[in-house]
Image (cartoon, rainbow, N blue to C red):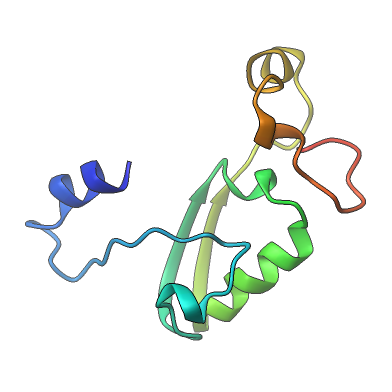
Length: 102
């Protein structure tokens, strides 16, 4: 996804940066700085993390004061979603107090 986004958008929007992020890992060792992002876009990805509170804490560390998190997630369990993605290892990866990944 990252390579395609970069090739599609980098020429027209040269102010954008493209870098892979493990939101559960150490931000600084991955080359990120605190308070560096104006906007973070996360679509159907944050729910897959082990601990949603920790994940959102890392998102918060990356955002500049007044920065925006644009997040889209499913908010209720759907049978077909569990049937489709439930076979993937990461779907049931959560270790926090959630009873379901969504």
